[in-house]
Length: 480
Image (cartoon, rainbow, N blue to C red):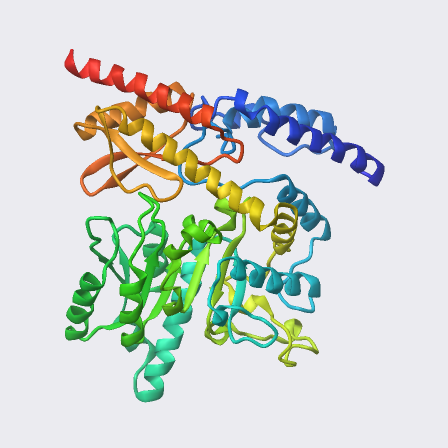
């Protein structure tokens, strides 16, 4: 493909993408295929000779689209949102064209410097404490990770290194292995599975703290676990507080948990993967109160802030906590400016060395939407969730199972878990809308998340009528 064909085909692809998104409402939100559907549709080996672009494009509709779950459909109410916007897609195109691998400042100065500035912009939008901002000479700063899972793991590994060095400085005879086997980290029983997975990868014990009646981690339960573990000779070192849990969007009590972490000298990491975007709205900023106690904070603009995946924003109060854990400088990665104190080499802030020019997406989206446009997007989703909640509450056969704070509604038919499992199966078999469930204590619960950028009140109304009709069918079947 030469440049003239690229110009032509590129315009065709933009048209295809625009047509796809414009017509997405007409596609079944969930695919009607069985596992292994794709293999028989394509050759067993790559072609020896080049094929025409037209043939590739034709096969998208024949082979790929039948197996796509359309996350941006206005009938997709599963999981949490995955963000998408035209400015972000254009920035991703430019990112792909530039194609730099921004492991160091010298590898592409603009890649590093724009990220530092964009993370400060975003931190100010959230009203983060000054310590988390890079500024011109700050000790903290932000970095774009691939996912919240990566951010949690990076924080845990940095905390592990920090506590190990602190203990060895006080008692040089202690080996790393002796310390490691006694380290213990804490998280709410409502935290995402990726938190426990971070402990698995990091080789440290993890302890789930029972949440309260509102599915939040509280000081009393955490303190009880700490006392037990310290009495057993263990070393508490790391706590993950979740703001906006995956199951029901509950919020751990930062103002209680934070002071305990400070008193016990434990690293506090805040995972606000979904909910963090809402904190740019003044009316939701109070949900972040207590962030001043944290050592690291993370949320995903690629969930709810119109920035396409992947773009997970993480801040630390002390950048040396990360660079101290991950810094290695072989000769081939050294450059003449690295010791100037004026630059950042982001390879020391993350698991992989390589990184894409992801800050372009933030730059495009922030400039083309403005803070007010982004706030309007968040508020619209919250209002639609409140609309769905009110519809559910008007039907006495259904119940709301958790407080509706942002864009997620947890609900179910009053009755057995089997009844609600049957309802969800009917909903997803019909493929008019898509939902996923969760367990809240011993209850099987349906989650209704406002996801699509183009979802409107009419889509929510349609979804509720559809759920209500299928609910009637399930209740009728139970009586027969």
